[in-house]
Image (cartoon, rainbow, N blue to C red; front, side):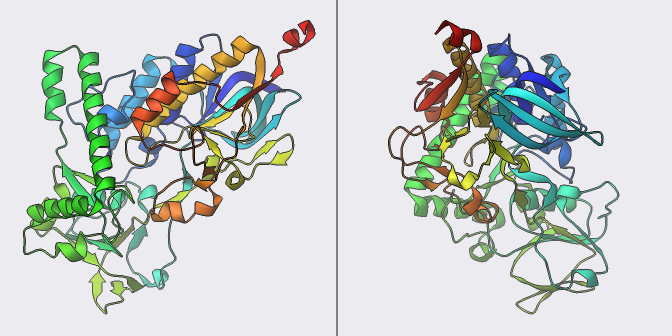
Length: 488
């Protein structure tokens, strides 16, 4: 027996909770459930428990459009974000639609039935659901495994090696020598937090990353909240941050050398002209070829200035019993090694998908409006921006899915499939050089050279297209409802 819902959402993180709100608000007659493989909601913000975990975007854009962020800090810690998600799900009754410990292991579309059959592992048993529309909000990385390169000599190290994705409360770093391998968002978060208790922390990187300091509190936002109604102050701050972010992104892409010079100078102002900024904080790539790292209140730079932390730019030769041997010949002594070496990208939550018995190979598909795929009916994903907050795009995607469902109902059609009507030239899905993307680049879907097959890293363009633009651009509506078929 299959339990049926009009819409199944996979994942109860920030995207899934947002999807639940928009579905029940814009499609009140539809039934939906959220299938969550873990035992709690929150996704990233429940999974990651390493010291200092925080947002790398401001909460006025990482927060939902429909529920204001009310805390003073714009760059918030993980616990505060998790509370915000839990409170949102409870306030709008979204939590009553979540099925915990339901891990999706397969999804199969039947055009004859105009249904998805979704196979789930739940409490040690396999069961099935059916739905008319499948909406994946499961993020883009593997929750069960992080990216962990094989370092020579790992077994020889006498201390402990831990990946931040699997941090546990028993990990002791007080008064210890810590080496954090990596220079991304996780590393720059960990280093200043660990440095508060550790004897010393070294951030060991192969190459530098662009790092930008920003106040953890948004002074304008807090000023507006004291003078305006909460929702109005929130929306004004949200738009201020969106527009400022887009402006600086466009300037950086248009004038990369000037942007690079400015970003590096900002670091030099923090660390002083005697610090070797050229070696440790001057990347070889242009700004926004990879995501910029944010450090609130310049905490990383403060830890370096105070001597509690330092940065070493070199390559690992091998691990030794005492620490890390570098290709330069130096040895970094360590009691604890934290491998902040990144995420393992997992397409579609690792779920095998078939359409009428044929396995979907995602690299053969074109992405439609950054949310659906050519030849795959009644299927969408939430995928955020690389140059702005994830939730901005996830919110728009959920709104658009709801619009699409309502259009299908008005037309009396059970199936909608993106299909190019004019030739489309395939291009890479993301113009991004980050290692975690490049490792899976050949497996990713493609985007097209023109709309609606092009992925825009622009909230304002997507807002116009997804909230106000044409909804049936190069979509094929088919499979009439049985009652309409009989009338015809």
